[in-house]
Image (cartoon, rainbow, N blue to C red; front, side, top):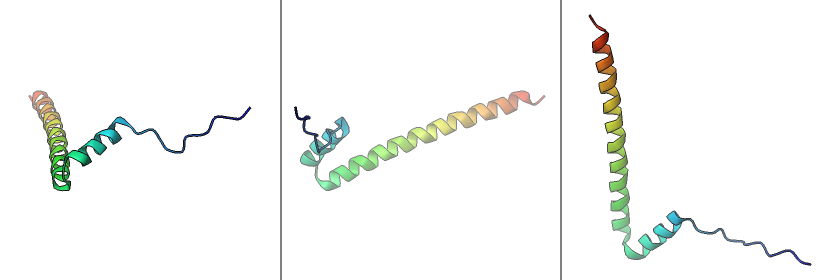
Amino acid sequence: MQAAPVRATAIPTFTDALRAVESLLLSSGQRTARRNAWTSVLEDRRRAKDRVEAERVLEAVSSVRP
């Protein structure tokens, strides 16, 4: 009895599939713009999280002072 053949290529992930569709539908400039926009969204979320944390620290410090 022979062993089943090993698959040489990896099964694409959902992200890989989305990127393939994106490359078919959008030009290179549009892909870059979309990725830049998403990067900006992530950076805005990070700054908002940092701002909330800074507010908590300032409130904690101000409540400690007599």
